[in-house]
Length: 167
Ligand SMILES: [Fe+2]
Image (cartoon, rainbow, N blue to C red; front, side):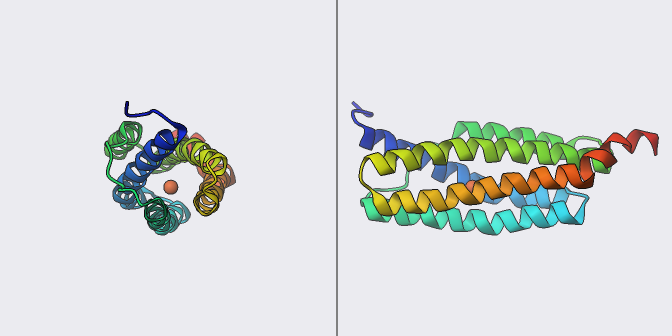
């Protein structure tokens, strides 16, 4: 039985997150390149650096547990990244594309927030205090990244998208 215990499920969640984050480190540079607003570009570049740190945190956790990070590819992130790259290729007004990129990035953040919240709770229940602390750190970063995207959308990008057709 592959998932016989909460320990097994915890490891399964961690490997899923690890695959998701590694996929993101390849997707975020493309999103930064596609962004029109310098602030949005910067936000994607900043989150890339954070994401690299998040990959390292997960590697620390695998070390702590004495387990390998190898697991199946995260299919949800594959789908989210695929939708993102379709958006990037779309023939769209620059401001409308920015609004769309924010929507795509927030889908990713929400997926990650769910995953990290779950993994952090399992870590606490299983008595892996250090792993729980590391997961909580990343969870806080993901929430901040999501809030920052909302701020960018609300402080001009959505409005410029709304008026794009009138220009
Ligand atoms: Fe992340």
